Length: 498
Image (cartoon, rainbow, N blue to C red; front, side, top):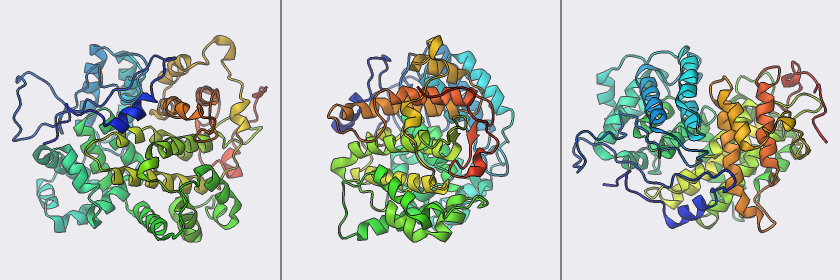
């Protein structure tokens, strides 16, 4: 059986992780040391006092700080984050209310831990966000047992009341088979059952796949089980769009591997039917807008982005660059700088793809598929906010609010974001951009790059994030391509450009 505490990145993954190392911030990647999955039948040479992460136990060490390491961690903070995440795992539902709003505690605490926040800061944010969580629905052992019947598994999908049952089901599966076998069986087998669940993982504006990314990056089987259970209770309309787009890409007789995401963003803007297919009043602007009024146009354009095994790493950097570009550049001058809540999720999800690419138990074909599906959703999300006009000069000419205080480099940016009181979106956003700088920088050396964001722009975006969340008005805009989304924001009280 594959051992999660013993695996090392493949040679291609090592090449990629080297590109993530920044001497400026003295950060290092975690390397993929993996974790041992506790199983009912496993034999081990470790003593009974050894604590390991398992499908039911969250345990982080000082080394489990993820792919993006900004500073070091100590044993006190490792113990505290493990304790808080275990409490969240046992006492809270994956949704914080009956409307399907997600519990972000895992994302928040692991991001804070990654960027070097101390135990006191983690505990403060945990208490703030634990205060409004709901308890899990009581477990129904009969349902858990019934889920083991392949003919009955499907009937429980898409219903949040079965989250706790799915969690225990996946924990039992992982204890019996190992995490890697469960992932390959339930997500990557490329049969109808696996395709359905993988599609659900991309639902909810990426939340299940984000959760999976955290579980894999920080090597926590219990969080992987949470992610699979979360995906199982999401609906499957996103997956249907992804499968249709994938089929369209495969049927294209003349695909071009050179078509870029930036070109496709421009093509979406130029297609007036598609660009205006989402309406302000649509409850869900992808499902009720694009996929009702212009589904063929959306699929035709999204299916043009092609990834091959040979281009996987470069295309990963391109996807990351493009997501940050449309998230950061979607401003509406002279209004104050604000970021779209949904665009931001495309950026926050991007950080996990180097981790996916480095998994030795995952086939290259599955890695390619994960990346292509990410871009298909990114393009739909971009379109859904009325295909917002993109102003790169809003980034390149931005003057940080804290320019005179010396807090404009990543150290100062992360100090501000770790103190900011929210559910974790802001510091996740900052970490994803700082990681992207490392990922994309090696490609800037040849002059071509992998997108339009480069050089000094990365820290400019970091400053934009910190400045915007600390500014007046709602923290996030929701629908930046629509005039209505900006009505309650004020014009900039100061000159933001040189």
